[in-house]
Image (tube, rainbow over all chains, first blue to last red; front, side):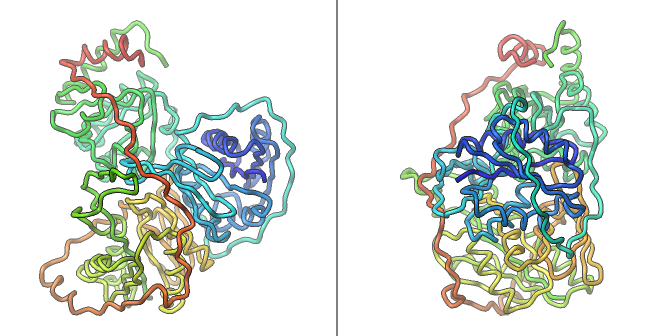
Length: 317
Length: 249
């Protein structure tokens, strides 16, 4: 039986992690169908049909799908599920919100946030904030699986030409009403997919001081991250949080500034290829995962860092 | 309005996890256990709503082994009115927990069910959404702000792109984020008083729910270790290493 991928999009275009989820789906079974639920989302559906790993696109539109409400999305997928062995989605806030609602309707025990497909019924997933890895075998007839996007490469985005089949919409769930979404617009790369991430913690001491990080991030073409402590203190908005209950990032370079390195923060960044820690406390746990540690006062180190970057002839972007 | 709050006993968030040598799980003997952190936020929010005169009763529930009752007792010490302990041993998957909670909701008829958005042991992030599916109730996950209005809630949710606000009609499920509030500490007099508050014990087997696991945990292992790094003497050396050794800038 084929695998059903749930596309994440913003009605105009696919969200990038759909490509990572498509890769995971194709590792389970070569026959991947993808469902896109939205409103005026034809362009995103077309993008989906161009992913070479996707063999068929199912598209459903309706005003009640405009804001991705799980209560409206779940019935559509539950109805499609009888033709599929697996339902796959990214383990970001979209998929985390939606997939368990589908799994409960199908009476299947969901496997969350997998980092590897071992076989079509066996998966590797981190538990305890990534301090242990569990190999899990699902014995349910239908498997609902969310995937950690940064653990799978994005699939090719062009070259495919899957058919797009329109399907019927389901009834509106009237007890949940969307009011508004406050998205923080930025020209910087997205935190989840950036090649370089510069993160600040409680050591930044104020929101104003984050400009020291912003400067360096702009110079390096990096995204800006933060520890939970920095977000809780109001230095920066929640969409920057890296960690067990925030975002998981795997950049080529992660620079942690004034972050002590609680287990919960390490869970979100310790798979990064190169880790730099700048902290004045030489005993801070962040140094245990750092490839390069600099024991220094960040208010001296960051301006010097900027100066040194300015001296370089070229910077990779 | 009546609020049911589900709490889970987990290894304390500060404990360094150790994997058992035989690969069957993590070491839990002689390890400090606590209430799952965002479940503390769920209790705090329910108690605050009651203190604001917008709820009449806060009932704390846990599902699990004998000692799980400690988490209900702690909830009673910070303001919950009474407790329920559904006793069951062994591994419980979120699907089984949500089926048990559904039975309790049928009996207790709360207007709201609160719980943490994710348990920090299995990191599943499923139970609230599953319960809301089984009940066909609205769900507000990852809540960082709750406004109680007449027969509805306005909830701000933390999503990857920023914040989202939704309005849900009661009865409803809310899963709580750590930023929802600052959980209070129990005072000694309140801890003493909590000892007198009732906790109803129910055997899971009496609820007629099949809680047998659907997933097999074949192996638990340590994640790969990172190679030890170096300390650099100054910023110039750091930038030089990043440029010429790691080649990442």
